[in-house]
Amino acid sequence: MNIKIADLEFEPLISAETILARTKEIAAQLNIDYADKAPIFVGVLNGCFMFMADLLRQINIPCEVAFTKLSSYHGGITTTRRIRDDFDLLVDITNRHVVLVEDIVDTGNTLDYLVAKLSHRKPASITVCALLLKPDAIEYPVEELKHVAFNIPNEFVIGYGLDYLEMGRNLDGIYKRVV
Ligand code: IMP
Image 1 (cartoon, rainbow, N blue to C red):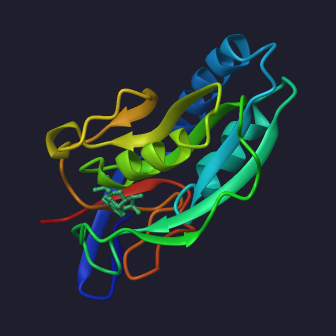
Image 2: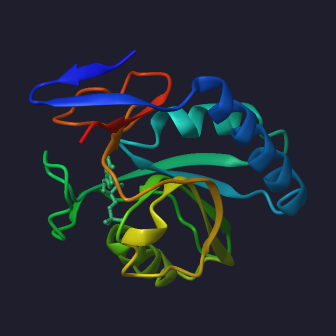
């Protein structure tokens, strides 16, 4: 079923079942890779909240959970390149293994900024796990991006945490803009 939000219409792209199946695969790999590392999973708000919850439900090793908040789209459908640091990561990550959990990597600008910022705090390692990647939009390749649930076309998407004008985050699947 298509969804209308303000002036835009969206059609289904990835179903809730497909997302969950892929999330389980990534979690299984993380359970192996971090078995004896007590990682800190750091969710990047707001968009990560559903992916973070579903991913962490499948993690069965000792771990911590924390959040930070950045924003760059500021309501539109293209990035503004101005990153706003809304809420800093408050846990000490020195000598700790950090797994950043992102909703979507578009140009990579936000992730590049965050990885650089957290690297200064001398963690043992940083790995990034993203729900979505738009390979055709990447301008800032981030080598720490090791897990991507889905590569998608360079189109605007909502649902499963992602918004348009702050709406649509509650949808259980991912929808793309009808152009
Ligand atoms: P980047 O800095 O260009 O990689 O953009 C990353 C941020 O922009 C994400 O964390 C999202 O908040 C937002 N974003 C990028 N693409 C989309 C999209 O298709 N829908 C909704 N938000 C998006």
